[in-house]
Image 1 (cartoon, rainbow, N blue to C red):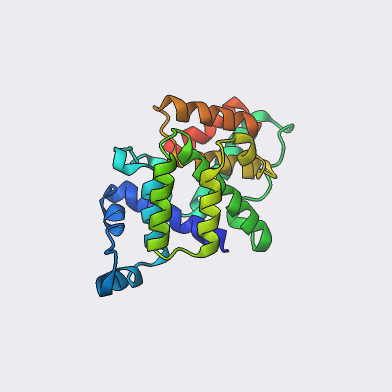
Image 2 (cartoon, rainbow, N blue to C red):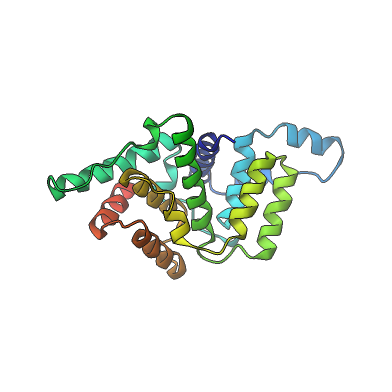
Length: 228
């Protein structure tokens, strides 16, 4: 499974949601149950469009969630990696020579290393989407239903189902961080879908920062960079 391509498509879908509101993605979910109209609808959906619909469900847009924050407009994995890397470098410059080197950002990785990093970022995005508790059994069933309607790749469908069913655990998400650059990217990815005005989500973000061993001033640097 090409996790890197999936993350890119999710971020592009997120940019569309932020720019055009939820309407376009929600309309994509209105697929006829049967007949030639259904076949035409499904065939007309690219994977990016399908993932846009799933992202709308993950974010709980039907409940009126705000998804217009500047971080969600990044639109690509390269942009996300570059922003997280820049935030770390800015923080590193303030720390002096003792700060750890960041390691490679996602846009400089290839092959299995890029896949492993991208998988960790997708896990982070799904976990952050669950942080407010809106994805209950009914919502998971709804997502499963739309995954089947949209013809999502079976491996991706299994991954989504497994991650959605897991208890929320920032330590599990943080385990994918094999470098400071990866930790910054995981935190930023989570920030993309977190509503910091929601107490549960803000608490999860704090726990994630602790699990990632991010210094408080680095967390602030990432947040400032995302809002700039």
